[in-house]
Length: 143
Ligand SMILES: CC(C)(COP(=O)(O)OP(=O)(O)OC[C@H]1O[C@@H](n2cnc3c(N)ncnc32)[C@H](O)[C@@H]1OP(=O)(O)O)[C@@H](O)C(=O)NCCC(=O)NCCS
Image (cartoon, rainbow, N blue to C red):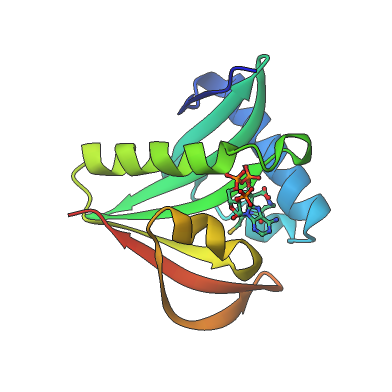
């Protein structure tokens, strides 16, 4: 099955990726809606994975000076363990490099840290709890 990985296009895709995030983070993981929708979506670059015209994966990039803050990585439960998150990470890497960023930083849920480690991210600092979920900060230098 072909999965397209690219920037989100238009209001319909934005609504679809927000709906996916709500389903994954709020309904599945119990993150409060006001934390999931933190007011920064309007400033972000949103990537999507699209299959059969459906958004099955998404993530968000915020550019702050020469650092990219990567977050809101979510894949539809029916499409997991097929490499979609890995493809989204690769596309984020490409976008970050194209924008001249020097590093990408993120807060990984500790259960999923191997996903990021495989893509070259290294942990930075202690574990902490965010939105009721254990995380660890990770970063990848691009230069
Ligand atoms: C985490 C998540 C984004 C992974 O998406 P995915 O498309 O299934 O990930 P991939 O198929 O690219 O996985 C690549 C590797 O990451 C690791 N990984 C992925 N999901 C994992 C899980 N649930 N538990 C442990 N390791 C996992 C594995 O090493 C995996 O390789 P493998 O399948 O050969 O074992 C997805 O499970 C999800 O949306 N979870 C809920 C939201 C979430 O936790 N987001 C991440 C916030 S940090």
